[in-house]
Length: 283
Figure 1 (cartoon, rainbow, N blue to C red):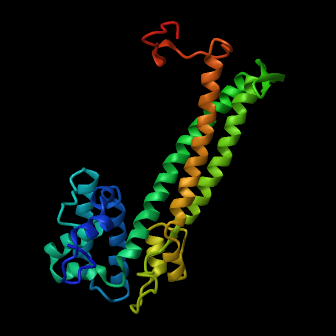
Figure 2: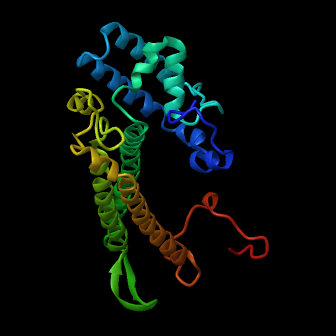
Figure 3: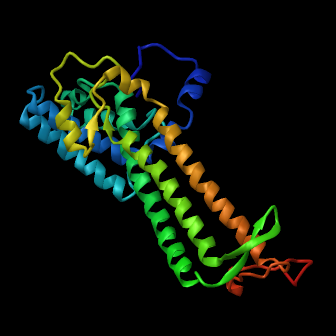
């Protein structure tokens, strides 16, 4: 099933190029697509497009799909192009015309955006939580070793006295800057695009504020064209945030490699965390 099907055959190479491995990637978005569909169904009922009975049928089925996702039993088979097609086809197969009504007032364009915005919000929380854990560890080490002296280097030349406290603290503070970038990415993700359809909204009396609250978005993308124009912008902001934190971790790792060498010997790791070499056992 393809939501864009025009009852004509598409060249296989074109379909492969446009869809690619969407099915496999979309399994990560299944949870969010179902949550978005449930909020959309409840909103359609609130504005009189669905009856309460129809809404109940749809949400009951969607809740069941969500349990399948959580148990790892929700599969997007090869005959479906993506998660959106799978969910709508499953609802239609199960509920007939009632299942078809779930697509009322929305396009796959805003479905994709909703799924990604919800997914990226969760991922930002997970990543920043991990960064916070490392930050706390570095701060504790900074305090514990604030009086342990070490040389400060300029271009690998000994320059001025410093301390391990400053070294640990420097990376902790740099991580704060990285988290600020993730905060910006999160705020971009925390805007509801549902209801923008393919970029020009819908003639149906959709209640976008209701879905914004139901999906726990801070606000909505008010202009439907702006919502679609944002595609790629959020991904770029998140990728830049990840690259920034990766750069910080890379610098820390390089310092650790350097300071563990025989020429420095400032720090060591427990034997169980290190390996030797087939030709240089002294490593």
